[in-house]
Length: 415
Image (cartoon, rainbow, N blue to C red; front, top):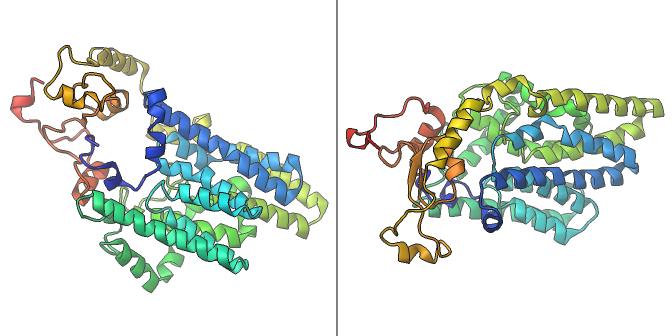
């Protein structure tokens, strides 16, 4: 990936991108990824409906949970924040939880296997599910699920090391106060488990869990056995925050960091309501349904659909600037007028087309230029910024304002 100067699997173990790549033959535009992500998250409504209907025995109640899912602010923010392969894990894990409910084990392990290809930390969502199955008496399925989770972690981190020139994932930098390798970080928390518990009550996370649970009327807490399965995935985000992008900043549902936990939160809410029905009177159950519907509608205001105040952090591009960028893009040649050196060598790779010229451009232009093999973030390759799979490059990427670029050498200024 010339934008970052490293192999795609040296950044994250997002093997699922190779399954999506052939779609580029059909529609070679970056918008395709946004459509795939939106459709995938919307399809998560299907296992939510099936799981809810099997638990509650009512189409109306199942549809209410579907509505709550589609309006769920955390899910909407995950979809809004560009394209991230791990977002595809949400519908895959929802499907796996339903397959486990109906004991369709081939489907269950197939969906878990796909979710393991979304990112190297996917195993942290699979291993707790295996423990849950063990506690529920599903010994063989539980052990196999735990084995799949552990194996996925080993393969993922080994692959990242291999494609990152023998170095561990640069994202370990986010956990540098706890260790310098994945094993050191895991070992640190095994020796200091009270830190995990303490993090649930820290000021940094006070609003985070409230924003996750309140749109579902905190029903997930009535099924703690399922709800707790989301914690390992959330812990990765919470502890990365302490040394990462915004050190000691409050955790937020804005972004894609909740994608592995959303399925457990949602199915726990469904099971929690089923238990509420068994414990309470009919009028209490109906009151809860009305409350859930109102809460889902009101909570949607905190997502991007209805112009949340958080949109100010990611404002849409002004119309005049967007039009100027489109005019600029129209002047960038799609193909050179004469073959470049090595064109015959690259012709087969480019399906018979002449090679595209290489481009160095600002970040907001990159997506529109992504159909070429050599694309750089300005001022790369003149002055390397966020280049490679090192902690230093990651620190530049996350903490260096792109309005404070290093000076471009004088010989390139005319370019």
